[in-house]
Amino acid sequence: MEAGASSLPSGFAVPVHRALTEHILLGGAPRGLAIANATLAGAIGLGLQLWIAGLVFFALGHMVAVWAARHDPQFVDVARRHLRFPAYCGV
Image (cartoon, rainbow, N blue to C red):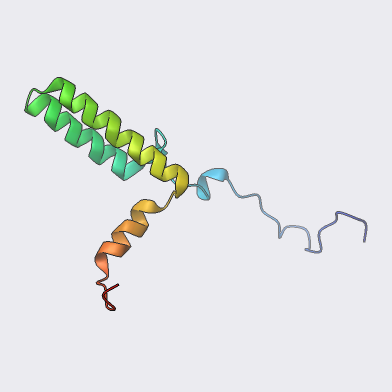
C-alpha cells in the first residue's frame, strides 16, 4: 500500500457534515437557554415596562451563557442531569 492510503475498501469512508457533530447554538449560547433568556427579558421589558432592566437582564444572561458554552458546550445537559440525580453520599 502506498503512504496515506486508507485500509478501508472504497465506499466505507463517508464525510460527516459539521452540523451533525456540533451543538446547536444561538448567538454563541445553547439554543434553549438563549430562547428562555430572551423570553424572560421580554417579559421584564414588555410586561413590566422596565425596558432598561430587560435589556440588562438579556445582555448579562446571554454573556454568561456564551461564556459557559465556550468552556463546556454541554453545560446545560450536565446541570440538568446534576439536578435530576440526588446526592447519595452527601458530598
